[in-house]
Amino acid sequence: MSTPPLPPNTTRGMAAGMLLLSGLVLGALIGAAIGALVGAVGPLIGVGALLGFVGGTAAVIVRFRDL
Image 1: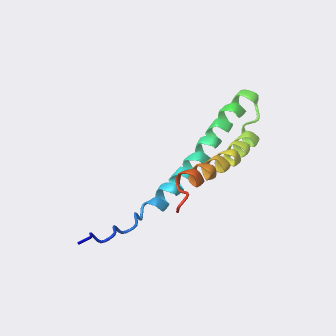
Image 2: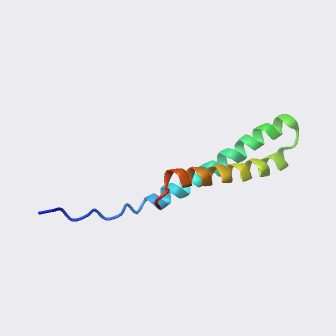
Image 3: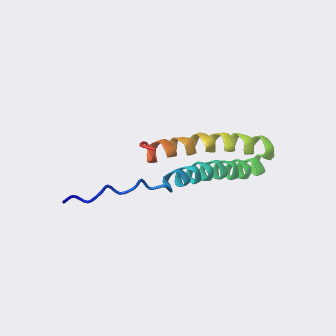
């Protein structure tokens, strides 16, 4: 007799969302730190958040390719 298949893991979507959110927040923090050094905090927070979103999206695509 074979065992029935396991139900799909329902927390994968939440983990993907947290990975995306953490990339966005990390990018914004790095942008704020560089902006504080340069003297343009606001614009570099926006650029960092945008780059963090792109990086987080790439990380989600690589990690959860089957989601």
